Length: 237
Ligand SMILES: Nc1ncnc2c1ncn2[C@@H]1O[C@H](COP(=O)(O)OP(=O)(O)OP(=O)(O)O)[C@@H](O)[C@H]1O
Ligand SMILES: [Mg+2]
Image (cartoon, rainbow, N blue to C red; front, top):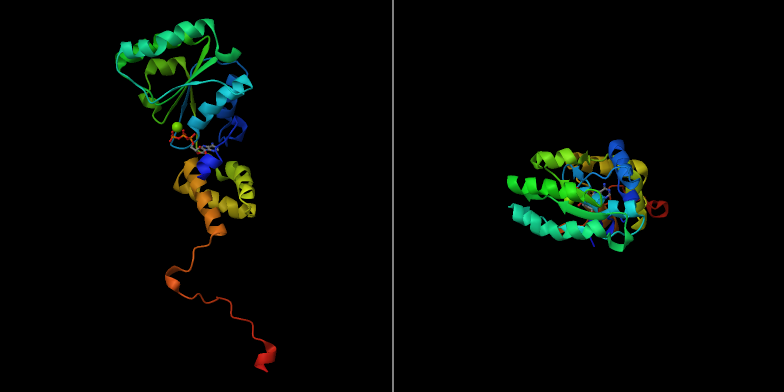
C-alpha cells in the first residue's frame, strides 16, 4: 500500500498544519462558532480533501455521516434543484444519526452563471442545518457570491519542521532509525521540489524502500570497498 494511503491521517489532529490561521479557523468550526460554508483552497496535495473529510468527525466528536458530491458540473438551475430539493426538505426536519449538523463535501464543483445563482439560494436555505465544505485549487474561479457567503481558508504548504515529528513516527512504524537532522534534510530537499504532501510521502516511501532493499548490484559490477581492507599483520609479516 502506498504511504499516501497507509499514512493518510485518520483524525484531524494527525494532519500536519502549516498555519495558525488555518488551525484557528478549523477550531471555530469544531466549537460550533462558525456555520458558514467552508472553502479550503491551495496548491495540490496540501491536505484540503483530507481536512474536508476529517472535519465533520471533529465537529461531531464521532464518525460523521457525510454526503459527497462527486466532481459535479451544474449547468442549469434544474441541475441544482434536482440535486438539492430533497436534501433541503429532508434536512430541515432531520439530521442523520442525531448529528449536530449534516455535511455536504465537494471537491471542485463547476457552475454555469445561472446554476451558481440557484446554488446561492440553496446555501441560504440550508446553512442553519447543513455544513458545506468545498475544496479547490482555483479559488478565483469559485462564484463570487458563494465566496462571499463562505469562509475561504488557505491550506498552505507545510515546512520540513512541521513535518518532522510525523515523518519520524512514520520512520518508526517502518523500523527505520534516522537522526532528526538527516530526516529534516530529506524533507527540506523534497519540499523545495514540490509542496505536495502526497509527493513528500512518496519520497519517504522511496527512502524506506532504498534502506530496506538496497538496489542490487547494477550490471553485475563487482563493488570495491572504498576503505582499504585492513592488512592482517600476521600475513604481512
Ligand atoms: N497536511 C497533511 N498532513 C498529513 N498528510 C497529508 C497532508 N496533506 C496531504 N497528506 C497526504 O497526502 C494525501 C493527499 O492529500 P489530499 O488529497 O488531502 O490533498 P489535496 O490538497 O486535496 O490535493 P489536491 O489539490 O490534489 O486535491 C493524503 O492521503 C495524505 O496521505
Ligand atoms: Mg483534493
